[in-house]
Image 1 (cartoon, rainbow, N blue to C red):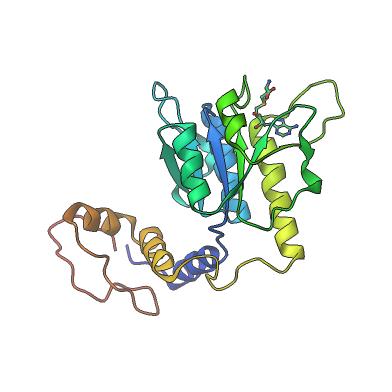
Image 2 (image 1 turned 135 degrees about the horizontal axis):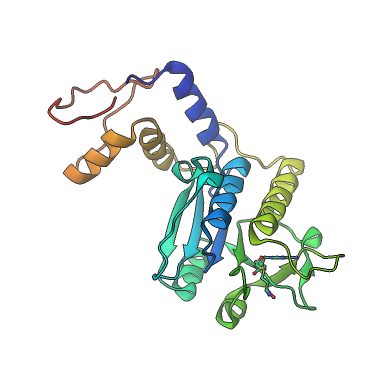
Length: 229
Ligand code: SAM
């Protein structure tokens, strides 16, 4: 099926708004509906990549709550919270750990305009002691009701949209793909536009074909495989 010009324009527009410097790190968040809802919020806000440390006995799965957002937000699966934190710190992220302790700062008093990672904990237990010792600052969304905590996906959405609000107010939202390096932009645009061809290229170890202005593949590709393009 050919890629329609309108569809290609939409892919370009959404990718142009993506931010490589805003992310979440999920520690043992396992329930498919929570993971799905968090990825959906990431997509809505314009997060390029999310991160997770997953209990290997329960592989990552999504449900309808995601509405397909797992196709549009890259999910990096880390071996441990320690390696995940090191990886994000090396990339320059400031890590805000969400905890419901008394020494947590009100999220409205924090600066999310710099490279920001929100570290969110498991549904039942919250962040582990290890995670708490690795983060840069503890934050919370103040609660006024009888129940002590929010659902993790609600907490994630609240924080992500606050980051979006702050960046919008500061005139820092990327336009025209400015939030991404050019080669990353091109790579992801191709993968979004032609997932089957991208998978085939990766299997074959070959570079992605060049696209013209209309998003068409100009190179002739073998027709032996069922490549949808
Ligand atoms: N008993 C757990 C605790 O004390 O952390 C509750 C875990 S809560 C249901 C799951 C996750 O949601 C938390 O680890 C945190 O990431 C996030 N969360 C829930 N309520 C929050 C709040 N008010 N402020 C910040 N994060 C919150």
